[in-house]
Length: 241
Image 1: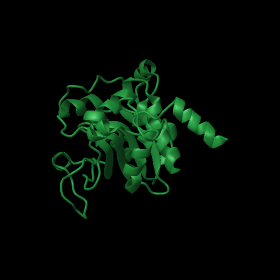
Image 2 (image 1 turned 45 degrees about the vertical axis):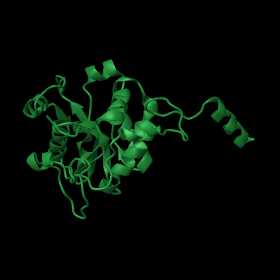
Image 3 (image 1 turned 90 degrees about the vertical axis):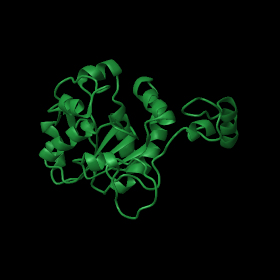
Image 4 (image 1 turned 120 degrees about the horizontal axis):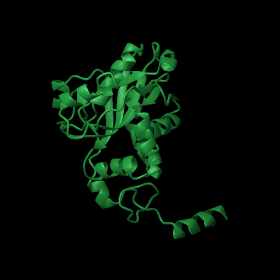
């Protein structure tokens, strides 16, 4: 009976591509066109930001951007490039109220983050300022981080970080302008600082462009006593401005 019920539901509600809505063979999947338009970070990747790199290497290597601009965190990974289907999915989650995307995106993120996790890793999201959170109604990084912690069985702290002031949008800013815009804007909440003492931390965000936001959070966590800090993002802009 249960199998018959599932078949009936499948007939009424066939699986649809999470990006474009076309019919697909499995739940929470991509159609062939959207899959072809997605650049997943597989194989050899930059050890600091996760962007896919050509060739094969058995040792950790860095992309040109991370060589030129060293990151304060220890290691980083991403799911895909912020282009094509990757960009569409990020924008749908961020601005389109597509919280139904969280489960499949979290599955991808869990695979990307696996090399960064240890049993005692704490997972925390990049925060939104309260005014922006009121306008958007949810923090997409927090939704991903919460689901990732549940998926991997790790500890999670939604309010580890706080935005001390509302910052202007990073869009269109140079690397230096992005860094200046975030100077002192992200701190560790004093009531949560004890969670970081001598403990590894994984910071979660939706997109990495220049790395200014992740750097600001990493430096705040370092100042609060975190032992080893890593970062994972849903998407990475291929070339930071």
